[in-house]
Length: 307
Image (cartoon, rainbow, N blue to C red):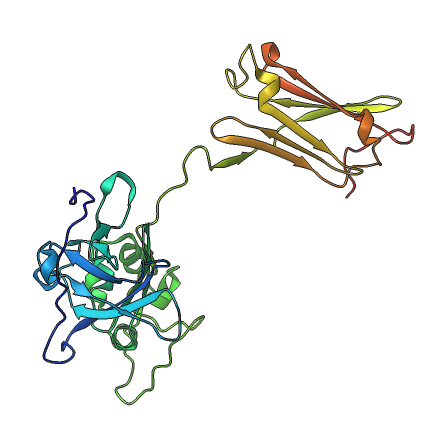
């Protein structure tokens, strides 16, 4: 558990002696810092051991307003840290993360030259690997002995050249004089490189489940669509208030505002609808919803939707 949010006064200290030999780059989006500055405090000694007087100060970008950058000596992997904002009046605010949580330095970002990007108050962080790390991964030899005992190696041992994984039986090494080119969309080989950390899962309120099961029946001037729902989803009282349905000329969009949200969308209906005559019937006691689609023309529908 990190320190509680507080307001205090302190003096930021910057690192002296030029750039550290092994450094991690930091980039923070922090709009509205109150005319002050952004710093990083943490449990690692390079961040002051939570001593705000030794927090690492970032520098505001002249070209990109609201962006703060800096670099720190490589911290210990998984050590905790947090952003702080020093206001113009000298007081300080910790970034407001959920449950007063602290951030952690992902193990895969603790490499010289890597860049860790984040936004003040938002737990998600993205990692940009350094060119040095990418080239080192690409040049690393794949050690066949590391695979002993694995299902892959067992398949190779039993089937030889007929093995499904035969291509994995060859050792490969990038020649010393080869030029390694990296960038978006280019595969250089080596160990996986972390792209993002600290992301939070969507809450039940934010998540949407798309319904796929339904049946339908056709009559002279209307079509009925029956949508079954799990037992207990529709309460005996107030179920109508949870259900919303939007009708258009050739589609219908149903939403059940429960946790998580349930939706059904049927597009390219077999014929046009008279929207104002369409209706929704909620049958909580039968655990289903019935959509009554009013046909614009009284024709027989052999399929609910067009191919």
